[in-house]
Length: 185
Image 1 (cartoon, rainbow, N blue to C red):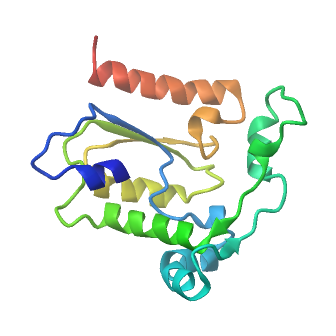
Image 2 (image 1 turned 90 degrees about the vertical axis):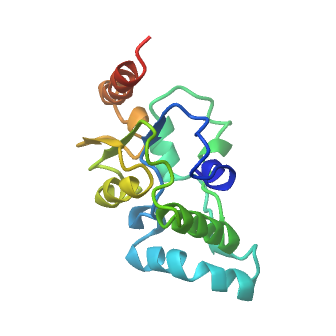
Image 3 (image 1 turned 180 degrees about the vertical axis):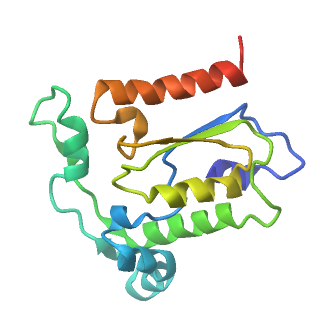
């Protein structure tokens, strides 16, 4: 989306035939950042924090193994010595500020919806442990007004990587069916 925002104007045809969104971060979901207060701080205070405390000031410190990543990868066999992809990472003030600025630009694009005519699907879950599902579904139409919305009941944040093979396949089948309909061969 940022690529589109920076590269293309309304009168230029998109280089994309369609867009598949899997729980897009159009808002900081309070579940991802530790509650409503922290979401408010990230949306409104990171620019000030970045200027006053420095771009590298750590707002949220990584503290070992991420329970979110561990929950995701525990389903698979892997060497326990290779755990760095499961480590939680620091969130700096400038990173949060950049994400908030991008979200603001996407959702309040001066020329109206960023991609008004492109075929798109947004998949989200009521069981999303990172984002607020209702926010995701309501915000996507600000960017992609013709997006098909597919809401799952119990999938993870990343609906194609849910806790069971059946749930993951349901999400994959959903976007495969959408692609077959939108782009028949």
